[in-house]
Image (cartoon, rainbow, N blue to C red; front, side, top):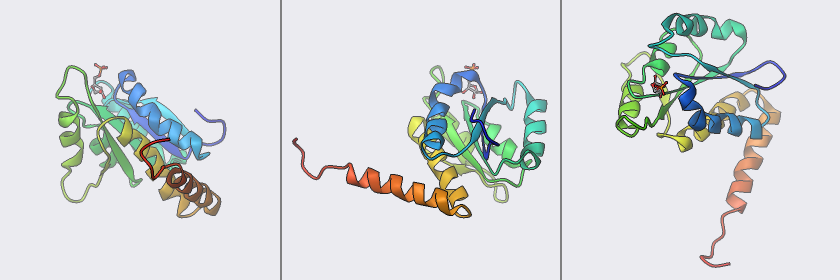
Length: 164
Ligand code: RP5
């Protein structure tokens, strides 16, 4: 958790999702975006999920990143209960279907209740953090400068030769 008021909520169905979901937290840290990470399970703590989703906007969150694996209902259920944008991260579960189950559970939302679904696993979590920052940057010029600088540094860091 960061010190000042969190702008992004990172929620996940289980502590076991954190090794993947911390990539979202790292992306936000890198851009100086405040966040709070919580375990909120659609299946094991449904009332916690409802309470969180219903109060997220009044708590001051502006974007929600929701990661879950297997029968990954957390992003969609959360999106059904809040007007905030929800970014869904499919977490690959070791004993599951390697993330395909998570992906399909999150991406196939009915029309009218959008979840912005990212890639399976760490790349998806990282991109969820970056995308949350880009959303916030629309109304935060200083953050927009940091987002653009990061993208430029990434571009500058790609060599055009295959050898050193
Ligand atoms: C989902 O079940 C969680 O998001 C997690 O990805 C998966 C497995 O959870 P654990 O059994 O590891 O707690 O709800």
